[in-house]
Image (cartoon, rainbow, N blue to C red; front, side, top):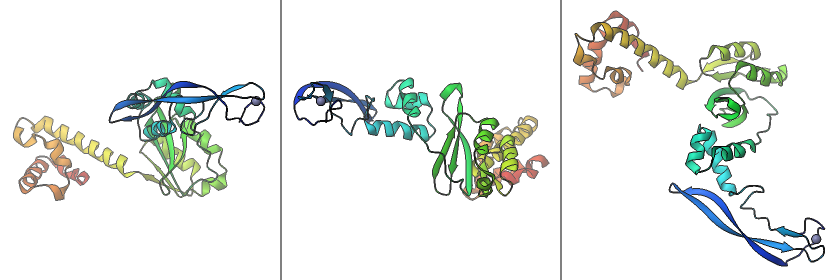
Length: 263
Ligand SMILES: [Zn+2]
């Protein structure tokens, strides 16, 4: 179909060779040599190329490569590492990212989760991603993880919409807690399991370090690899390891009081 006059033609004028990037195969970059037909309209003389569903307009890459890049960025790849994986420049990957259009949610979900991921877009190292964990949907991506961005986003939603949210899932950042109090008065804030456990492990390891400073020399062998040992699940400890853990815990009252963190 001629883009100028709208009449159809099957008259092939010539072929153009185009290099189209595809998904890397086994880590090796794949470039397709695409022989693209060019038509000349017999009615008005206009020359034009054929369209192929495999290659989106204005891209020198296949649709499935575009989809692959978006998938990488979703799974916490940074622009830099995604670019490296698909053997493209960072600016090309950013251009692909800019073409993603995520529609604003019509309704806020009952479970509203926010987390951050490394994106490097617009000089901001971290972006915030808003998801509905119940339906496994990405609702939106905010340009940065600042409190003001999230507040600006939530202001667009009516109070009635915000009342729908029953659970607000986030990490333990105080700013998120403040937002939960201000915007989701009917909701309960939930600290996601991953961030909660991580904080517990860090806190307990601080205690371990303090105690090791005092007793480390005296019980050198006992403290060897104790960091890993102390956070191991109780059920997975071998008998000899259980004995060591017990000895470690009884070295100091402080360790004993904090052992509840051991999961
Ligand atoms: Zn024409």
